[in-house]
Image 1 (cartoon, helix red, strand yellow):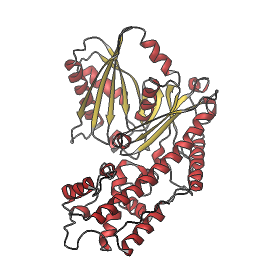
Image 2: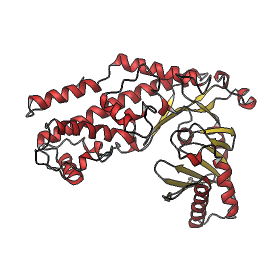
Image 3: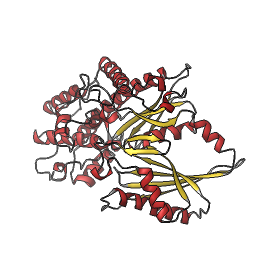
Image 4: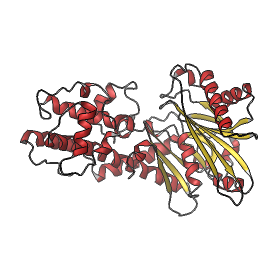
Length: 422
């Protein structure tokens, strides 16, 4: 465990900081156990969706050979559209790509916000169609084009075109459960007389894996670290006991699996939340669920740090006694993005002090700044190690599905990684 002792801090401050660091510390042995349990959960998920120590592991019609299909498409002039629906951030992203042999790919992108008053699946699909219309008008797309739809919800895929949002989805509005996204968007496009048809629908983590294959054909797994977390990998159909589709079951080509990694940790004997993690879980809207996600996802890391800071405040071990800490007392006001500012290495931690002043109206001493930076480091280091162990379990599972001994390439994306890019 790193030594977080702060020069100039009182014995009580350093003792409290050491106690927190020890509770968030994870050993190599524990990480090994966690990686093994992730592998076990993935294996059990291929048997049944209801295994107590298993992940849903939803089977997709996307196959590992899709990179070959992409390369074949690039050999002739063609165009395709991609629509990403993010229900967690209330955004839609549209992109077009035009292939022309012998010329660079032409890519256009545009982001749209989803209105706050969307209260039905039909309204969401209609809004998607309106944005598609705006996009093709802006970029003067006249030809008939296929549209691939990506959504941040679990799908029960029944065909190459996609499937319905899973009934047991815990992260979406009730009106979206059991909705066929492809069918809904297609119907809305037809009503607007647009030259666009949905040809595929899948979860965003699988799309991330496919996108990575465009540059690294041997990509076999993907991890997304956003407000929530998820992972996907390619599995051999013969190892999927619960697979009912004869076409996929008879295939010799690996198929994509949406693991729903966010659910890992439920019924776990290895994941060890601290008292602060239990507090976050108790005050959340899905108490008892997505246990692992609450230790590592963008939505929660900043809130864990805020809780640690308020405990320091309650012990009167940080900030001057007459400091107005009203903002610190409000849940989810310490954004995870602030933690990247804590990498400040200036002699007086100028950026850390500036953030506390601008964001919380707190005039922090040098010791206060060091404490806040140390708390961010403690929380982020634990999250990084836990995610690394989970990826190790996924890589092992993806390796077992391959016929060759090539290294497994893992695509890692999401705002939690992007905010820490140099």
